[in-house]
Structures are given as C-alpha cells and as structure tokens.
Image 1 (cartoon, one colour):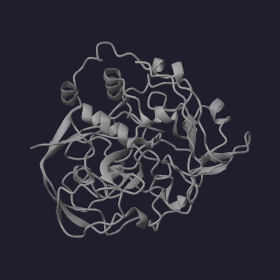
Image 2 (cartoon, helix red, strand yellow):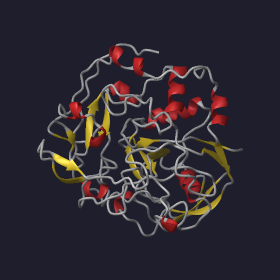
Image 3 (cartoon, one colour):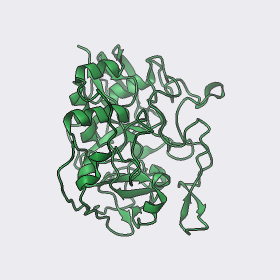
Length: 384
C-alpha cells in the first residue's frame, strides 16, 4: 500500500549536551557514559546545526517493500502461533542491581518484584514479521512520518554519508539520515530483502505498540522483561550466568575489538579527514544485527537475543526513582514529562568497556517516537 504524498519539516530541538536526553536528574548523563544509548531521541541536540528534513516521501517509499507471496492475508492469531511465544510461570524475583555500572540509569536499588503468568515472544520481531503487519494494515511508522531516523555511521552508504553535515552532539557516530526507516534501514535504496530474518529496527515505541496490538498482544512491562531475561536465575549479570563467554563461547551479539575511551571513534580517516569508527572484529560472527534466532537460546525459557543484538522497547515510562518495597505486577510510573520510555537488553554496540548495558539489570530510554539502527522489540501477553 503506497503512502499518501506528504512533506514534513523536522527540527531537532536542542537541549544541554551535559544531560542524558531529557533527564537532567541522571548523574551518569554525559555522552561518554551513556555511549549514545539514550541520545537517539527525536529531540536530540545535533552537532553542525539544526537537522531539517523537507523531503516528500512520494513514490520513494512503499514500492521498495519486498513481496511475500501468500503472507499478506495471515490473521494476527495465526502469527502469534507462528511467532513461537513461550509461556512463563509467574513468580517473585530480585529486580535491578545494587552494583550499578551507570548510576544515572537507576538500576538500583535491588528490589523484590512479583509478576503473574505471562507469555513472551521467543525472539525479537523480525523484518519479515513486521512486513506482514504493514502489508496487512498499511501502517506507517514514525520514522516514515518524520522522513528520517538515526543510523549508525558505518551502516550509512558512503555516497549518502558525504552529504550529511549533522550528527548527534556527543555521540557523533549517530547520523540523522533522510529516508531511513524500517524497510530502508541504511538510508538510500538498499532494502531488507537480504535481512528479512534480522530484527526490525527504526521502530518507535508507538510502532511497537501498534504491531503488538495487531497480534492481540502488548509490550512486556520492564518487570516482565527482566524476569524473563533472568531465566529463573537470581542476581546474575546475564541470562545464562555471570561470565560473558562461558567456556569461551559467544552467547550474544555484541561489540568485539578495542574501543577508544568514551567513543566509537579510533583515529581519523586519511581520505576524508573525518573521525573513523573503530573496527568491530565480529568474533561472534556478526558485525551489526544478527538473525533473530541465531546463536542459540540464552536461558532455560528458550529466549533468543534477550540481551545483545538490538535494544527492546518495554511498556514502562522512564523513571529514576523506584519503590524499594515489594510490588506485584508493577507497570512503572503513569507518565513522563518528555514521554520517555524504557528500553532493555543492550545491542550489538555494547561492550564491557563502553556501553556495558547488555546486562539483564541494565536499562536506558528514548522518547516514544524515536528510531535507530539498534532499536527493536518483542511482544508479550498475560496468561490469565
């Protein structure tokens, strides 16, 4: 379904680069400590002046979508079954950590939470599944409406990168790219035909909610997500335990190789004179995103890539204040002044020395309309 012709002017509103997104209360809020995790919000400050997009999407959009023969008419109920949700028995667990890596992320205090029985997707929503949703509903994502999204610089085609003069202040590896959205995740004409089984990205919290609702599901709460990620283990760093590589085995898609202190930049390009992105040595087999069901399950619940690969939206509004007393089925605060939502799990950009947020207790946030190269989701539903 082709979109209507439209033209939208977008201005990224500046805010103080010494704060994390729009949460000045965060004590670990510099771009160095945040690694840009929360910098990819639509209201991010840009280096090089205001970013504006005034392009008409016109015929340049939906015609690029791959055609999946016979799949457009699938019902949402059949997709739930095919998507392989796993049923998780409710229980009580210790949420968060008393040894936070980034104080401003409010991982602490460790607090007792109880969740009821629920089901959750075994894998992140793939490009293939999101394509089915769009073909069935004609849904248009936030990144399409804005006509831009944040793309990790190495993914931007060189001919497009040459034309870009803006970047996120303090996290200049994130570029606002015109025309980038879930079906054209790099900007330019290259689509998703070769990565249909990779996680859909450039989807906002709003987009994730719409997809899950279509499936008769919803986003997991932060408590449900963390309970599922922990896989029945208490006070562990990862879904499988405390070692990043048990028995020398890569268990998640993350960044390998050296990183400069507080940056993804290593030196300057001899040809362009611009800062050069460090090399991800991809020892886990993947330089960027990985197929949603690759690398094996990460815990006994049978969940793939619950940490690493791409960040995952959860339903909660962002907050840095937690009730230390026990709670049952918490849903987080009722609102947030800047409409920030929580995301969990880290991504392929995480590393032990920089952006150490692929731990189950780790958390970050973006505005609900944000999209980026490393931001996706999975769905859940209550089992009553």
